[in-house]
Image 1: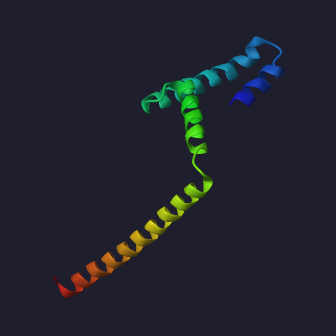
Image 2 (image 1 turned 120 degrees about the vertical axis):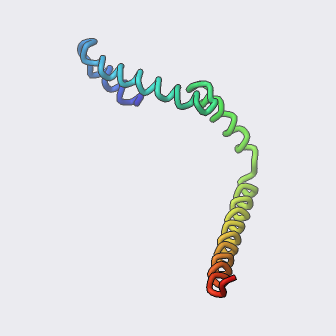
Image 3 (image 1 turned 135 degrees about the horizontal axis):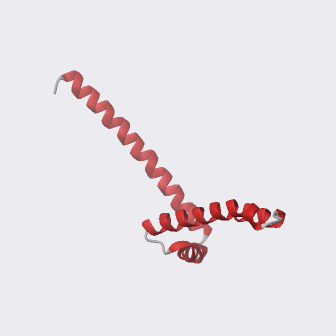
Length: 99
C-alpha cells in the first residue's frame, strides 16, 4: 500500500489525480486500525511495538531450544494422531459388537 501511494504521488501532476489513491489509503488505514483495535492492539504503533517486543523476546531464545520445542510438538502431534486412530478403531469395534 505504501509503495503504491508513493508511486502515485511521484507520478501525479495534480492533486485531483492522487485523491483516489489517498482515499484508498485512508480507508485501508482506518480498516487496519479497527481490526487491530478489536484484538486489543493500540493501532499500528501498538502492532509495531508488539513486533519489536516479540523480536527481542524470541531473539533471546537459543535456536536449538526452539528447534527442540518444535520437534517435541511434532512428536506430540503424531502421538495424538495415533491415539485418535486407535479411538476410532475402538469406536468402530464397539459399534460392530453393539456395545
